[in-house]
Image 1 (cartoon, helix red, strand yellow):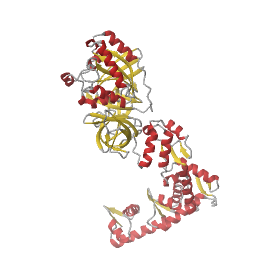
Image 2 (cartoon, rainbow, N blue to C red):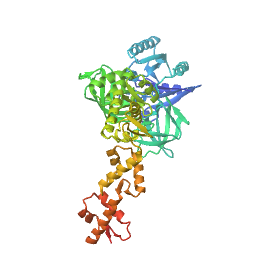
Image 3 (tube, one colour):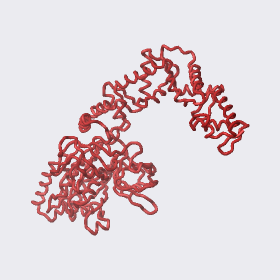
Image 4 (cartoon, one colour):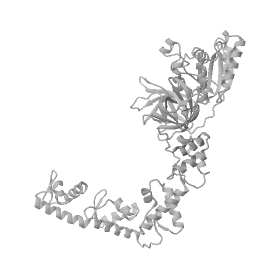
Length: 609
């Protein structure tokens, strides 16, 4: 099935709603307020189908005060049906709609010269020429066809239908990530929350879970309808009504439905903009930022040193987070008038200095991903992650990795989707050498090094250890690396002795095991095994999760505590502190252990003999 979303646009009273009714039989102005005022206020939706082609219409408002609603609909268009009154011709709102469609790169437009029965052939031809001349300046729009139309002439309506059915299916760059902006949300008795919108990318299935980005919550898809028909699955470029279940907060227009874990929201993004209608964008200006069906107040900061520009790069600071992706279209308005729009280049707030930011934006605008990757790799010395490639570049992980393979002097951790500059790998090997040179008897695994150097992935560490082994600096025994010059016949016994010596020295204030392991540079698993053996041999006693004490020190302490009870009459935390300057953690553990002795009686928080 070929699905095409066609948006109708044009000046008020030029006949959009009547034309849609003639095409589909749908009465667009269904809301009471719309019928009362005789204009389209909200977005109206209808469709027509022939064979395996379905054309869905979004009828948007033509009134100048309702331009924000027109913008909300336009983000979902695959093509547009422009309505021009044969007698009045191009009017201000028609031109504004065309400029919005141009900013959003809608592409194909079909122009209907309506009310053709009320105009002469010469006037109609004049209007056609006028439209062609105006659209010629809009580089992102192509006139697919221009047709004189009268809703009272069945032949003209049939010809328009055939033209719309013949529109080519739009080839869209897809990352298969569900993105669906809510354009309406309402409650139906017995069903619950229902939202409507257009699937911009990806698909949605009955019974699946979707993530509401602004609410940070997962909800269940209870029912799906495409043009009032229940369906199991809906895909890109389909108008869909979704019955959602499980949201504890209201779902509102402008919210984004997607998959959990793929998109992050940011209050700052970088864009390329163009102004329209001889407007210019001023530095530090406060405008409305429109993306999908969402609108947010924003401050525009120009990257040039100019006070205002007709086009260029800008930082957009938003009052609410937006969950945009690379190359998302946007519109800027002021006082309900469109002043410009453009494309999101950097949807993830990248704290780069201007000297690096501008080359990055140049590369992104040109879709020179290799250059963009190189700039970001150089800026992220501790690894540039590709996990967010779908949001950052609208690339799948496989596509991003393929580009990374073309870059010289990098180490690519494919399983963790991280690219490191080759000098970072060299520096990592130097850091590992420093550990082993400082402690000649260090016994570490790749995992234990990872716990110390959280910026380095396990694969990068393992590769570095292998290279250090190849040059003879380290040798490997099982998963443990030691310095090649150190001869150890029984690693386990050496570690047990080291840990026991430390615990003997610590006495009644023993260190936590992980601190011991770090101090002698041993692997956690080796250390845990050594503590288990020491505990089994009763050389060490475990009092709690991270509290191990040398057994003889514990025996001596218990005897001293009994002597204190004899002297003081009882023992509690305050009495304990009079004799030992220990933290509460130790005191509580030792009092609890004291309760194991038969001669000790506990009453409340006090211990007696």
